[in-house]
Amino acid sequence: MLAVVFALLSALLYALASVLQQRSAAAQPAETSLRLTLLTRLLRNPGWLLGLGCDITGYVFQFVALGHGPLVIVQPLLVCGLLFALPLGAAWSGRRLGRRDWLAALMVCAGLALFLTVADPSRGRPGVGSVVWGFLVVSTGALALLLVILSLGRPNWQRAVLLSGSAGVVYGLAAALTETNAHLLSKGILHFLGSWQPYALAAAGVGGMLVAQSAFQAGSLDVSLPMMTVVDPIVSILIGVIAFDESISASGAAVIGEVLGLALMIAGVFLLARSEAVRSLHESRSSPG
Image 1 (spheres, rainbow, N blue to C red):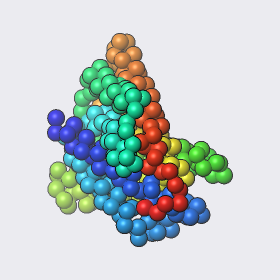
Image 2: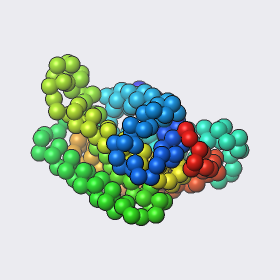
Image 3: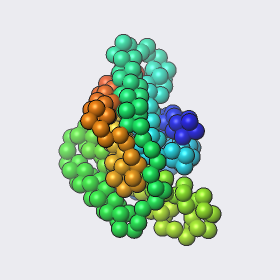
Image 4: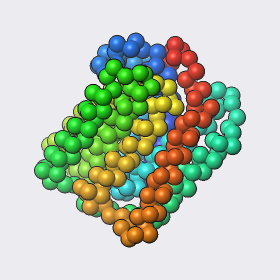
């Protein structure tokens, strides 16, 4: 229960951070994309800094959640960030939510509930060996880099989608590192600081942030946020099951239910992101955050 509560709080703060950061990143010059210059410019933007504060607090809650629950429970709950972004967007723009918005919200909740109920996930081991970590870092890093390369020279909306996917992959790896770091910290601060995982997590955090802000810069929230929201938990679930032995039900009926739940959740996410309430958060690319 504690993992669920903190995961939902994390989702709320991540949603608010996405709203604030996308508005700020969209106003930055296109030539700063994928460069540290983009982050240094954003660090001088009050709206973006407020979003960063929400990001940091949300991460602390995610850290606590992953310390009390497995990846396959915590990460899918972060999809609820779009459920929070929807009323935030409506309040921001003064719009009312339509039937399609509420239907999409119901799809996300139903899909999530179906997946978690049918999968019946359980915790695995808190850490893995260096060989497995090497495979995880290389494979996810290669996939994230490939998506970045594919984004070069493409129209802005395609670039936003590909960069968001890349950020989602990096954040999925960061979630796995977070779970391990929570276990390391429980053994004492010296043990924690003497391990390589905290520094790998810091590098993944900065890299993921740069790619995510570049995605926000390239396209509006309805284009950039859904892919990131969906890819992150999917990568986390795969890592949790494959590397951390976090088991989910594998019977024929359960697999069908899990696939149906994920499909329903993903469809709802994309419908939510096309909502007028969310789209209105980025009506003008020239508006500073």
